[in-house]
Length: 191
Image (cartoon, rainbow, N blue to C red; front, top):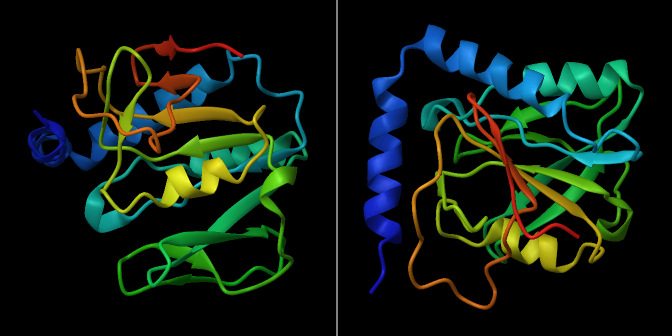
């Protein structure tokens, strides 16, 4: 049995039920909760820029924290033919373009290899109490994480609390170490 499609539908509806003010407030709460984690000793942090039409978490607050701590911030560009991502260092001269899927991405720049990335902040639609996540179903993050160091710290971001269980987890699905919600942080399969 597979409940992924039902959970995707449920969490898209939950996102739509939030006002812009609630989404912004929750995004700030998530950034503040992130500050309490022991993940700030690293140098290279991968972060996503939100897809506005998907009502994703505003990562501007986390981005401000990373830049304030003088961290190397890495953004990805998606290739929809291979369902893989190429990563680029965010600099003062990085030009951000929104692709046809609504994803804000860097327009080239200094490429960063996956093995340099130490912490990954991940978008998701839903997650469970074991640290499994559901994205949009293309597997971009699973492919990306499989090419990162085995020590990479995987941090999901969610407006909401976890589901009890995601069914039909595949062996290619990579679980998270943490998921930060607006209310609290969940800890999973610690390294």
